[in-house]
Length: 475
Image (tube, rainbow, N blue to C red; front, side, top):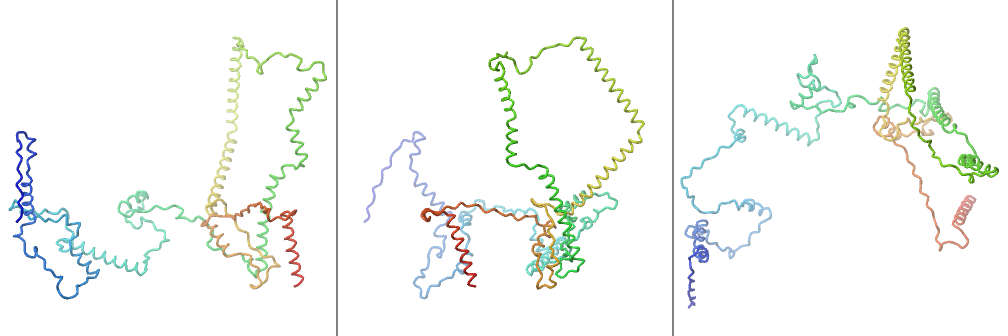
């Protein structure tokens, strides 16, 4: 027997006001409606099949359980729908309240490319398919060439070609189409021309990529070639000596040399110029009757007082008359100069012609100098390029064979200087760093009484020299 719970007595609440309605218990009604909505969404037990309600227990079946591999598990999971899409699935069993709903299939905007490719109905569709097939054939060939590392070079990359020759209609013989307009048109039709620097279209140096050495540098040169090389080296050395002598003449030789004593005497004399005059004036006052301190001097300012002296009418009139006279004289001088210039027009014309000729010569020389500087080695860094010294073997150093030849040049240095001459590398110079002077001290515990560090150093050096001399005697 089960105990029956006594029925709870319902409270009687006044429903006089609207606020009292919230105190009414409607839990049973809410639960009934929730169960009804759940049955509409999921369905009742009468509507479900047995397979949905019952599960066959296969744990008692004979045989080993099948173990799936990782690859098989992945294939099974791939067939299942993704968990991220489960929230989008419609699990409700609620019937559509409008049974006769007209489902209109909306028309897709734009072209259906897939339909055009699969079922072409127009000539342009068939042409597009053929073009696409040719494109994929070329793409496969290009990928195959790239895989086999076969680069097809269809044109010479060093050949200078005008872009207007490739596009018809841009190169006008009459000159109606300018180059700027041609560049603008080529950019708009999909063949944009990349502007390059002007230095890429002309040579910047006349230096050769490889220069043969002088015939006199051979290990067995001809006497004439060797003498020509010697003369060339001598001329260069004389130029360097002449330049050094000029610099010495305009700098060091311009100043006279004096001894340190004379220098100090001159400096003392220069710095004591005013002191000597004051001392002489003080000595004269001591020998005279009155001293300078005993005489009372009246106070006066350094600058003289300014007096406001106004000019009289007569002085002003004379000043104006003098200014007018000066103006008239200057006017007469200019008229006289003009008359003289008219007389010597021919000589003035000759002077102008000479001046113009000199100016033209100057422009011509500057133009030649600028043109020459275009092909000289440029300064790419801090230092200016200087031609290296020529390798020279003196007549007594020439061996005549490769076995006994004295090497003077280096192939690596020669290539390096060639790259600098051709403006490919900046000119550099060898920087020698001075070794820091380290002041050494000897510990007190290592010092001998009455012996300095220098004495120990001298002793070691003398011992090393004695040991070396003894070894030489034994040999």
